[in-house]
Amino acid sequence: MRAMKSDPTPNAIFGHGFADLIEEYDWDKSIEFVNSVTPDDVDAVLEKASTSFGLLTPEDLAVLISPAATNRLEDMAAIAKSITDRRFGKTISLYIPMYVGNACTNKCVYCGFNHDNDFSRTILSQEQIEEECKAIKELGPFQNLLLVAGEYPALCGIDYLEKVLETCRPYFHNLTLEVQPMKAVDYKRLTESGLNGVVCFQETYNKKAYPKYHPRGMKSHFDWRLNGFDRMGEAGLHKIGMGALLGLEDWHGEAIMLGRHLRYLQKKYWRSRYSINFPRLRPSESGFKPNFIVSDRDIVQLSCAFRIFDPDLDISFSTRETPAFRDSIIGLGVTSLSAGSKTEPGGYGHPKEALEQFEVSDSRSPKEVETAIRNRGYDPIWKDWDAVFD
Image 1 (cartoon, rainbow, N blue to C red):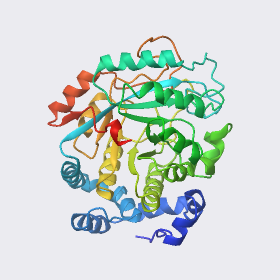
Image 2 (tube, rainbow, N blue to C red):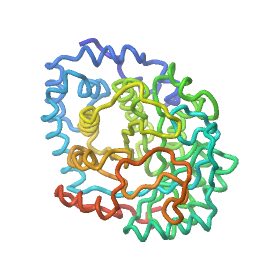
Image 3 (cartoon, helix red, strand yellow):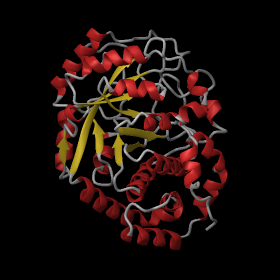
């Protein structure tokens, strides 16, 4: 097995943003490393994991996602289940997304919100958002709300988002944003209006390939987006959500870079909690087809590998995935699931023909998802944060 570049020195970690450090890693050599892993290498990492939980390196993670590790997937699943149950108990947290706007200035080739898609755009008013809150509360006792919008700062900027948080806070204890990357001072300002966490997907960590997927718009600036996670940490956000959009580039490379990025952030912004999501490309109005197929088995291996890599990490799966897959992944590292999701603005209170970001695969009601979780021997958790801690 070839050696892979080690982590940057502590001085480098604390002196730069991750966009500067990423230049130290070679994407192609990382893939070569994964393909050079042997069964003995896998055995060594699994032995290390059994005696030193939480101390694995990104190089160890690369071993666990390698083709050589696929024959040990059952062993990895057993270890992942043991770690998850011991750290989180037999629980699955539930959350629901609310799309407040589908206007976007970006031209991402794979996204339904692409600026060039010829559909009417919607930005919900505060009155409409309150109606959405009430409609969601009728679906189930949700307390974890993910607020999503296309990247359109002129319409969905800091002032608008502050009002959105203030409107939603009386209905939900935990509020998370998935919007355009912002300045640290803006993140800090939003925490004063009830913001608990931010989710952002780098989409792909392959810097050379990134421009072909993001040709126009603010999202085309790779470094600005990547260093957004540093700005979240600087603002002291309680929780930072990460991920790459699987299907654009080789998922092994994405996973390695995600592991490196996570370890960097944990060392520098150790007061924040972290979550990982593994979204696979879904059909959208863009008509884009995945360049790399990521199978269910690949996702299971990813989930187990990241759980072994980091026992404290929250691992989430959205309704992008099918009901059968989401049921089967329970117990294999996952700690949270979305339920009852609508991916168009106004989808709960006033459903109509609006532009969706992607097609939902799991259309079950929250009650049905709750039942499926219980059937797996786990307890659904509707509330795991209280506003008093803000």
